[in-house]
Image 1 (tube, rainbow, N blue to C red):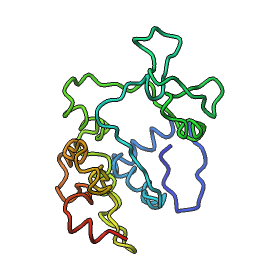
Image 2: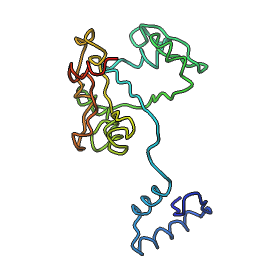
Image 3: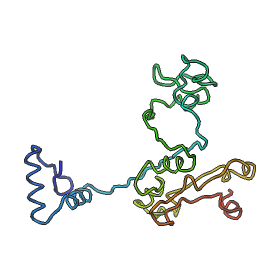
Image 4: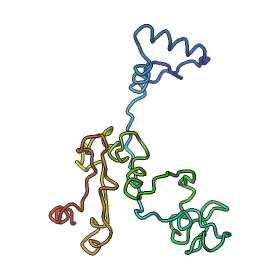
Length: 208
């Protein structure tokens, strides 16, 4: 419901028809629907809260059978080759490689309906990281566009990309294609994620 009121005040419920008439009258008076929404958002307080989000991107496309749908009752060609493990949810199993993740199944939501029709790996990876948003920017870039590039107190970047190369020289030969998961789309390049693996001097400065 669209109701403008001071912070902390409750608005009485209204019927959809009455609400529609209120919006129409406001629009005629010069206050459009986008302006109403913006005013309501500002009255509700800050849109960004002190929360961290970790996106684990397994580049290379592990199948659903090896991850969250082992499908062990199916023929060998379409079931997990690593077996299955029980989760914290009755009747739900994960692929055999995820025992620790399975123990946390009651604290997550597995989206089983998502798919896309992109057959090329590069564009598909970028599409997944963007969540299909029209800017084409990866989700971290969108977040830093709203929340700011760095933490005002610590100076730590709010959008960070951690790849195998950031784990040390012993992993430098592993597959690396940061461009597929760090695109800014139509946003400015400043919103590209901070990549600690960008240079050896940077890695030395970050070594404890």
